[in-house]
Image (cartoon, rainbow, N blue to C red):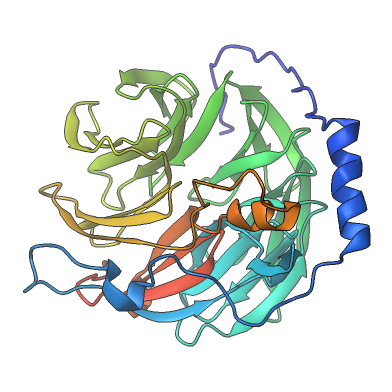
Length: 390
């Protein structure tokens, strides 16, 4: 039966567009016309290379992750003579083969072979950036959400992805979850409203929520979770009945994940906290708070490991049972804090260049690896203690 969410009606308010003063815009354009940027050789500039001394903790006898591949992913763009990757906004694993799917700010979605990081397919998915990408449970389709306000369903036909459905959410689509039977899905927009759709005929069923920031669904569909900009979590049954409300965060929640065995729920947000909850709403483990917001997280298929990515470019790996941090390391380049007042515009822009945000992460259970992606490009890390489950 269709999901009928009993949420409060939303207030659709379009945010005002940010504008730049005419003076600063003319200065920037004049500078670029006078001195076009030249692409320099090399790929991503790392502040602390993971190959040198970034990974590790006091437990030196434990198995540590090892980086296998590092590449730009969706290509490069030029900023004042510096070649920087397009930001990877989201990623997921496509069952059953375990290929990777990534969404980029360049408007493309790419499919990768997890073993050798070879690009298999690239599709022009949206006008503007692709903000989210979600796999269907059966592995036959995946969904992308973009800045253009559409959620698009792509189906593999003759092993190649082709457009199957297009859902007009009306606002930039920042997240989505697919029901286990693949007949319905929920899309989340920048307006903070969740909408329910029937996949077969692209029918809009209902909408609900106000100020929502993340969605989650259990593996077998018995529980649907919503997270808000105020830091609260609501749990619903599959027919839309509210079961409980949890409070534990301050400010927006960016991630909500149900463990694969449906024993716990993970949430992470702008307050730098990652919390593991029991299904009854009891706080099981609290990781942090850290000084930087948590932008992404994932739970391994064996439910033993938690991977988190932070806005300051830090990646951290935790034991899901004890909550202890296994290791952490820094990715990308941070902006220079002190810039001379006599610096040229080019020097100032280069000093403010940042490529360190960890925007997306996911475990690749078929290969005992995990993926980290963001403003620095993409990296695949081998972590042999990660195991799969049936």
